[in-house]
Length: 280
Image (cartoon, rainbow, N blue to C red; front, side, top):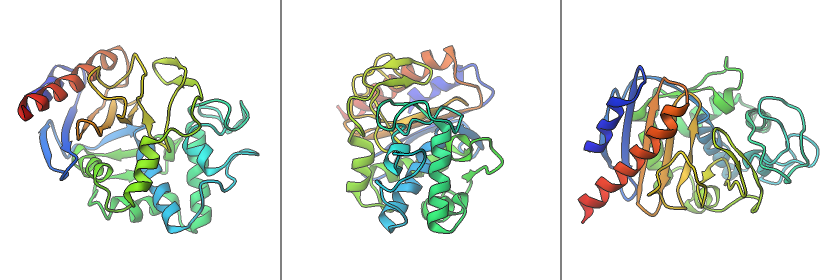
């Protein structure tokens, strides 16, 4: 795909990208070093969330099991409504009242899963998600300050496999994935979308941000409201647009900033425009 060549102009040391079709998981285009290992930052939360969804289906825990501060549940932690702070295991709001984006909450989620499963979280994620999908180079860095929230390392090749799974689930029942990615958890909850300011509402599923009507946004203006995914402070993103039937992955090693605010939506719009042209 010619549109992916846009990453050559990004002010980053390294960049790689891929586009994956939803119907069959085919990789429609790639550019850059597909096997280069990048720090995912908060794109790690997508992997953590998927491991949690596997745990839910396996009966390790339930969405409404208590987890985190008093009154909080697994569902609250996944949806960033537990009341825990960004990087502090300290309560700033009553559970369910505000969308407080929280690395700390995801670390509590991982600890809750590990205690319930009797296995370290990074090992559970590897056995439940990475190994079955053939994500051979993906790891959760246990030495990270926030392993479940920001400590993932992966390649575009591996995340392309994960993007295919999100669109055509093999590890989970499709209804589970749809609930996590298409249904807003705690509808109407407002909060800060990191890097973009306060959003009312700030819609989120179970670990997956849902675009809905947010503007300005890190995806493209052509992305549908159904688009879901995540971006990371390390200059990474993964989105899935169910209406377009594709996913896009882009990984860099340059921190999120003004360059990405401009470049990411332009790439997303160019990808969708090229696909529409190819389909016409």
